[in-house]
Every structure is written in structure tokens, then in C-alpha cells.
Image (tube, rainbow over all chains, first blue to last red; front, side):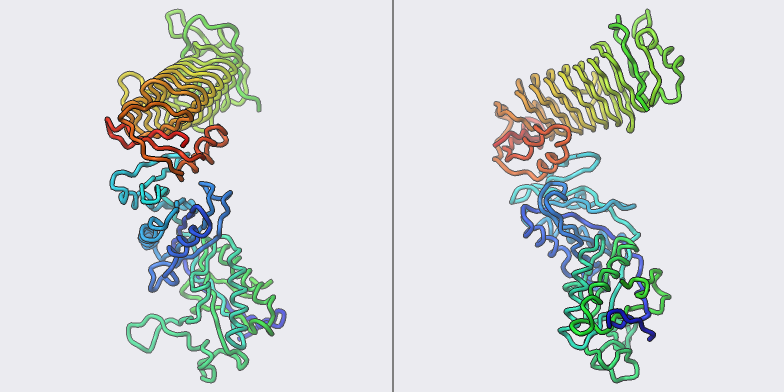
Length: 302
Length: 269
């Protein structure tokens, strides 16, 4: 594969191929950071990939008390799915089981989209007719009595179909430790990008997949071309100095957010250099025919 | 561009129907056309030109130089994006049925202020008459949205049959505040008298001063309400004192249990 070199790190002349998704989000607040974060992490747990989880979700940004509608510490989470129906189902289920139940929390909209999802309107009935609504500046909120006081939840939140899922970076290094160091630096940098999340554990996935399998009925299987223990086989694309590959997958509210996230990730990984971090960076695609969004690494380099 | 100015020549000799000179109806009109509008309510009649010196300007924003308690129906059915300012008093039914926009009054306002209002923002520097936000005879519900701030005192039965929206009374409220309220929020920073929240269905009355609410309001203890924090932040620009009241720990009296009972009176704990 033709390559560019930046600070000794080889960059594949390749691109990440991404897909349109439906996205929505919530601002979750609580009396303190700890419980806002617990609610956010619980709600976005088991949401790494749409294949098995129904959605991809993660923490976008932490909000200070000054930035939230009710003046308490908060967290902005984003949730993406292949259809708006899936997004709505996942959001409402997760809200009902993970945020309604979490002590101290309140829920507000995180974005205004072309569509609206009934959120408070869906969980309000938990209040068994003791719930009351409050209208403020054109927005409606439900006050649902719960055992620690009241659960305040906005009636509707925005949903947009202009989201992009599947931006990615393949980080290749000599061994697990150095590759992890580089990948973690990349994830950390992406965390600072507004409107983009990395849904996998710690933002990192080690089981990158290819389309298809030798087994009947399996849509996806291990990306053997990037498995270091298969590097001697003819199908491998790895160089002899690569002993570990980790992937960062990125979902964003907009095309630009994904591009910005990849740019930030690339910069941080390259800054670490090949000695302590990654020796090579690539990107995953399916030949460019499946997804309408292409992010060429050479365009995103620092 | 300067606002469209109406300078009052002398105290009107009859009550005036000012619903005909809301900003949206004046856009594109010439000075002559505006001066010819009949705003009288008696057989004698009264033209705008007889009572006001008109100076053309940006018609989305009206400015009344001088007011009167005979200025009825000022800003009726006002639409979003328009504004009216009165340097003086206003009469009955100020902002009646307004759908949006802003009305500011430097003096007092008459009865039925913001009656049937569905949106918009009214700020009265002085006092207002009875039946703030209330429905007129025969109507089922009162004010259904928007925000009213009365810096002075309000008359009797403010917030009667309130359906939605926020009323802030910085001074004292007359008897039977929030009577028959259906929903919405009333905040009173002064004293309140009479049967407070009489037959209140599910409105929130936030009172700075505790009072006897009668046996149909039941004490539900003192709590920190998240919704009150939200209101506190949103209302801070309109009334700092109201915002401070809402940010406190509040005692909740649920009621009126003589009716629906889903409403409440909140007072500082």
C-alpha cells in the first residue's frame, strides 16, 4: 500500500468508509459529577456496535454546572442507530432502565434535530398519574415523583438523520503496550471533539471485522488481514515490524464532527512518534462502494 | 430605525379600543391611514390623529409617549417578533389573547391583564388590576402561555383559571390568588391574602411568604426541586428575586385536595 510518512509514522494512503446514521442525545444532570457520570455510563453501556446492541452510544462531553439547564453538573451523551425507530426504542428503553432509576438525575435535550422523540412523554406514566408537567419557553418537562424526590425529564428530545457512523483509525504498533499508548492518546484527543463519540470499550476495539465469513449465515468475521498472528500468510497486509493493531471507531453528529475527530486522533497518535507509539496508521473501508462518506487519511494529516 | 411613536395629546374622554393599532396591523401603513383609524368606543368616535401625535418609524416596535388607564386592549392578539412600550399607564385587557411579542408598561395596568394570552412577554412596572390572566365571562380557561411580570401589586384573583404560562407578582397579591387555576406557575414575592389557590387543579403557586392555606392543602415536606432550579435559571433575567426564591429549599403543600389535588403551593422551608 502506498504510504506517506509523518514524524516517522507511516500513514496508509487509504480512507475510512462511513455510513449515515440517526442520532440523538441527552443532557443528564445530577447533584454531583459522580452521579451524572454513573447515569451516563450506565445508559451508554452495552452500546458498542449496532450489530448486537441495537445502537452505538457514548459520552460526548462533561458539562459544568454553568452549562446545564438546571445549574447542576451534567454529561452530554449521544446515541446512534441505523434508523430513527431504532434510536427512539433504544433511547427510551435505556432512559427508563438506566436514568429514571439513577438517583438524583434529570434529563434534558442535547440537540435540536429535524425530528423529535417522545422521551418524557414515554416514561411519565411511571408516575401513575401523580406526575405533573411544567412548560417553560415552549418546552415541556415532566415531574415524576420517585423515592428520592422528583425525576425531571423533558417531554421530547431532538433526533437528526444527518449523523455519520463508522469513521475509524487502525493504529498499528510493535507490541500491545506501545500500540495501546498511541491509541489511548488518540481516543483522549477525540474526547475533546464536540459531537463525536467512540462507542467501544475505552474507545478502542481490538476485534476489527471484515464483511462475510467462511461460516454460513455470519455477516461479519475477524479482519484476518490485520491479525498479527496471521501476518505470514498471503492475505495479511501487515509489515514485519507490526505486532499489534487496535482500532478507534468514531460516530459523529455531522460529517464534519467525524472528520475533526479523525484529524484530532491522527495528530495525537503521530505526535507520540513510532518509538513509543504507533509505527503505522491505516483506515478501514469496504472498497468505497458501501458507505457514502469517505475520510481519506492524507486529507486529515496534521 | 426609531420605533413608531404615538405621543398622547391629552387624556382621552372615552375608553379607547387600541386592539386596532397593534404593530402587525400597522406595517406598511402611511401616517394618514394610521391617523384615520377609529379607536373610539362611543357614538362620538375618536380617531388616532385626534388623540395622538404620530411619528412614523419601525412599525414592528410601537412606543406610546404617555398612557392612560383608558387604553384598553392594548397589544391584543400581538404576534411574535413585535413589541410595544407604554411610557405611562395602560387600561383593561392589556395583551389580551397575545400570541407572542413583548409589551412593557412603565406605569400601571388595568384589570384582565394578559387575559387569554397564549404567548409573549408582558412586563408591568407598576400595579395591575383584578383578574390578572383570567378568562372573560363565558370563557373556560384563562392565560394559556407566555410570561407576565408585575413589579407592583396585583388585584384580586390573579391567575384565575390559569391554563399555562408563568405569572410573577413582585409585590402583594390580592385575595384568592390562583383561584380555579388549571395549570401553570404563579410566583408571588409579597403577601397573599384570602383563599390562596382556591380550587387549584394542578398549578404551582410559589409564595415568598407563608400563610394559612386551609385544610385542603396538605403539607408534603420540604425538598429541593429540580424543576424549581430550572425555573430559577430561566427566570433570573426577568426577576432576580423570583429566581432566588425558586433556588431555595421549598415546602410543598399539595392541593387543592377539594378538587383535583395535583397542584401545589411552595413556600421557603
